[in-house]
Image 1 (tube, rainbow, N blue to C red):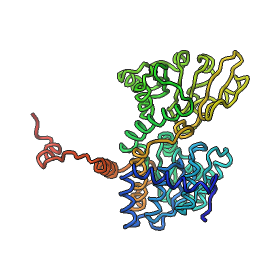
Image 2 (image 1 turned 180 degrees about the vertical axis):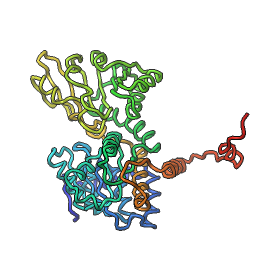
Image 3 (image 1 turned 180 degrees about the horizontal axis):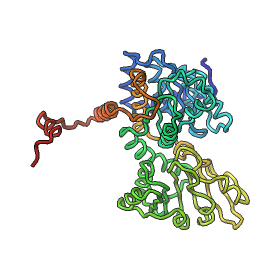
Image 4 (image 1 turned 90 degrees about the vertical axis):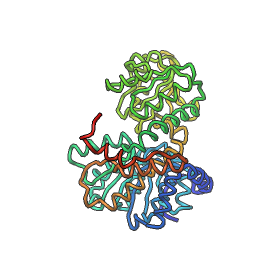
Length: 419
């Protein structure tokens, strides 16, 4: 058996069935897999992937292997691993996996080191921890790298900061910025899966509640939309005036967080920044307020400050921690402040991850073919790849669209013709 560190290898059969179930809703990735099987575009390429270890990720890993790649996989979040899936990838697909749900900080970074033991040519990241580790603790491996991909908003922010400072040492494609990723994965995937995580953790009624969403990027738009659809009074907090205006035009109430803290029943952060909900907010909240995070890292809620002002805390339900303040007020943190949709639920539906992971697979192929022409910076997904994925998705759904006539193409390319 390949090298691995998973919770229970005996759970592999359950994981295999769940991977198969997810595959049924991933027709774009399956079509890419079939082509990869014939063409082997990744033959001999070593890929280290730091991703959420879910059923959908398993299908991506198998696609990459089918294309000829060697793949090592580790978790991109300590609470997002589906242990039976990790076991199945090891036992049934012979893919080395280093991921255990609930792993501590030390184990998390050891698993990243285990993934890097492959001495990869390509990295795949969810949050840029793999890239960060390469650039700080495993610099000797950088010479092997021809490119990488990044799937999250948080990760892309980190990578662009690295690029601006001139420290990034190989080209990385921002998969997160593809239209076929953020318009669907971020909005519809995060919207539905975040509500799923909250409901599984709390079993609270959303209708009639005051639901506060921090931020109004694409993930937050999806969360706000779903909360509104379930009957909540949705309040959005923002620091960007354009997004605040957009939230207002979309029919949501916009308030500063301190004002929202006084009236909110449920709070969700999805900003990618630190201390969005902090001590002052905790002190203003109502007894029984619930808060969670849907951003990539567990830094958006100031958990250390919450611990300092609490006189006691206890786990009252799975993924629900009750903090009792000295005043007697009780506040509830979900999923240890980590991604609630993966900590308490199963993450995004397979049908949206189909497009996200199709981007991953095709960008890996693109890197292999074009890395000699790429510089040490962050790149957008090529428009050709984005459009091809959308075309394949529409085809799988049985949807047809119009095609421009030669006259229409000529008109769009000209400047002489007017009214």
